[in-house]
Each structure stands twice: as C-alpha cells, then as structure tokens.
Image 1 (cartoon, rainbow, N blue to C red):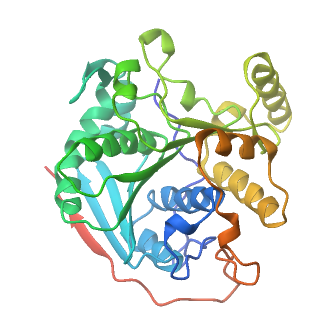
Image 2: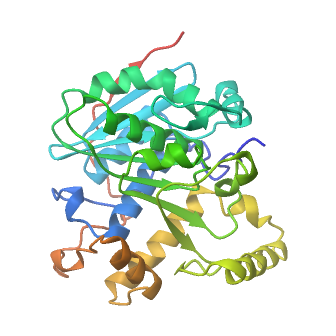
Length: 331
C-alpha cells in the first residue's frame, strides 16, 4: 500500500514562513536533551517537504545557516549545517511525485549493498541520491545526524547505514525518524548498529508496513506515544487496547486515527508537549526508563533555566533571510 501523504504540510501563503520552535543559539546539537534533539529533527523533517527557500529560512532561524538541496529523479534530501553540526534530512512521500509513489508501492526486497535484503523501492530512491550525498559528506568534519519522516525516514535509515560503512570519516552520531516504515529483513537491520531512535505515534499505520509476514523488521529503539500523546512503554495487549481507544476517540471526531496520527504536525505536538513537561521538571517515567536502558543521557543538567534554547517566535519577529545553496540534478 502507498504510504499516506503528509496532508498537514500545505503550501504557505505568499510571504508566510514556518515558525521556528527550536533555537540552538550557538550550542552544538550534542548538548541538547533527547527531547530537544527529537523536536529539532522533527522540525527539520517537516521543513524538508517545503521549497528550499522556506526550508532554508526555518533552518536559519533554528541555527543552521547552510542549506543544500539535492534532487535526483524525484528523490530529494536536504543538508542543513553550521560550524559544529550537519544534518541530512530526506524528504518523505509527495503525492504528485510518481517516483515517490512507485517507491512506496514497490515492497519487494532486493539484496542490500551489505548483507540481507532491503525494500526495493526505498533502496532505489537512495540509489538516486547517495552519490551526491556521499560527495557532499566526504570532506565533512562536523558531527553528523540523520532525520526523516515517513518515506524520508526509511531513506534516512538506509543513507545512515551506507555512510557508516563507507569511507566517509564522519560516522552518523544518531538517526531520528518519525512514522518510518519497515526497511529490510532481520539480517539487514542487524548488520549496522547505529544510535537509531524511531518515534511512533499511537495508531500511525505506516510503521506497521510493509508487513512482517513479508520478512520485514524494524531497527532501532522505538519511542512510542500513546493515545494521550505521552511517551509510553506499553506493549502487547495493553498496546492494542491503547490503540483501540485512540481510534475510537478520533473516529467520534470524524477522523481516521491510522492516517491522522501519521501527520508530521501530530509528531511535533507530541514531542513539544513532552518537552514542556521536561522543562517543568515532570519527566515521563517511561521515557526515563527507556533512556536509562539504552544508555542515552538526557543531559538536562547542561541547560541552565535562565537560558533556554527553545523559543517560539513572537508575532512580527523576523530574522535575516538565509543564503540557500541549491544542488539540483535531474535526469
């Protein structure tokens, strides 16, 4: 089945801009808490659906003055960068791009470039982009991150694996995906061990495809948000119950939860809500247990309360427009 398209990512009105929720203020990404990193990469993942001008302006507001756009036969990705960090963000499914739709539908497996087998459609999308990304990263000396939503998340995971195994000196520091589908079989996902954090929002249908009976498995560490938008560790019958109540609640509001929960705006809301609680000193027990289990420090103590790094732009507040570097190649 084709992946749902992000209907909350609509064209902006003339002159409108994306509002930056995140401000690095000169701090490297590695000094952010887990939730701050998640919000940052969710913002950039959403921005990747927009034009290079709009995405570049948001990146500039966040703290990434360098923006590069790569396009090859409909497979697209951004590189956002500053002095200390570089972020590769692959763009997700676009309904008017036949290449994206074809990639979503092509659920057969091909032999991976390493071991195991990988989703044929996702692999071909990455095959189009990787030579250009590899060329851009070969001289990179900054801390390298990967992020993406939906199809972009699947492409990001494959790109990060290739980067790790390539001659590129800067290995991926971490991978953050949002509503990503399964990418390959067990051998493939076990071949490379990356710091991979996979956000799943309640009834989002995309992380459940392609089906396991075709041999597909998930990699990385799952961060699950329940029907109330809270990070939760429920599994088994409790997870089924949580999803059922989430589906019923949204059905009464005229929405289908399986597709609504896939929207990038929903992921931003969930993470921003959890971050507000973190700033108030209310840490989600399930998230704390998860971070402790995987050995991922929250680094909350590095942030003095009088100097927060994340603000919402006030009405009328503007910044200088970033200079955007476009690297576009089409067949």
